Length: 194
Image: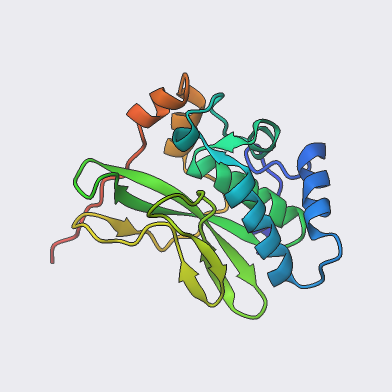
């Protein structure tokens, strides 16, 4: 579990602004479930999705996501991981491979898995709700932003302690929110034939 609690380059919870916000969100709450719910709701509702709101700059580090109050799903998952880790709640990163319009091309979507004492690993998606998207925090039931519906879409089972390199590259090389939207990262799924 140690790696899911670390402060790192992109999940930089020891940065003063992130640490202060994490403690503020947890104030008066006692259970990991209450704290996780409060942090999730903050990131989902108060940090604007860069593409939905056409906002710059492109953020990647949790501290920048908080500072500018915007980020793509990946960046928002970095902030949520940082806020939860700062509150000693193990949190990882998860990915789905999705279509944008129910037909290819595909792109990755970033979300989180949080370790709740009562339930174990539980996935949450702080992407931000909008028409047709309603992610909720209601353990043990998952209520993610996007279901897997199209052939070729994938719910990757891995829980990563660090963002995938392809995600970092996309966010750090993107000139602005539109450039990132035009070049969303994807991982090809290779099926083994026996």
